[in-house]
Image (tube, rainbow, N blue to C red; front, side, top):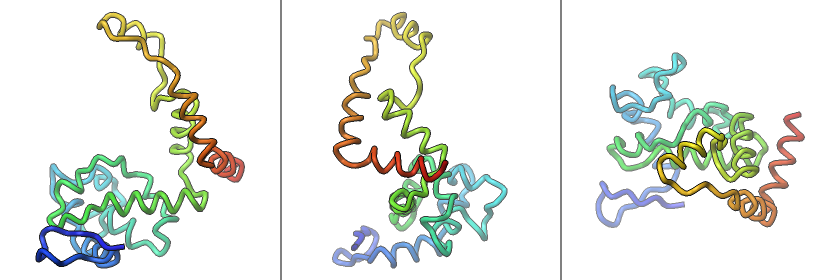
Length: 168
């Protein structure tokens, strides 16, 4: 895979490996106070062992449970001086982990919530009352049925069931 990076000469592109190596050596997204990745504030990470380095430099990056700490806030993309985007690597690692059945149990629960209700957060009666007070339309539940059909048609639901069984 070739990654286009605009800061280089107009016709220069990087391979994914080259972009990852730049990302591993840089670490700016993890150490600039006030703009750093929120995960960087975890005591396990510091200027020498950044969150991104921990994820990308692991012996088995897709098997590293820390890849699930990223909330995809895009701070790393905004601050990256090389426009490499560590988030792209983290998302790719998550996809590999999912294919291997290594999804974090919290994320599995979140996915199940979305598939069963159509929403990332439970809709409570108080939320419905507040929407009515604000003059907003009630939220309809058709999304859950549609998402369920898509998940079944694509094999996603089957994969989730298989992972859930394996996790016990």
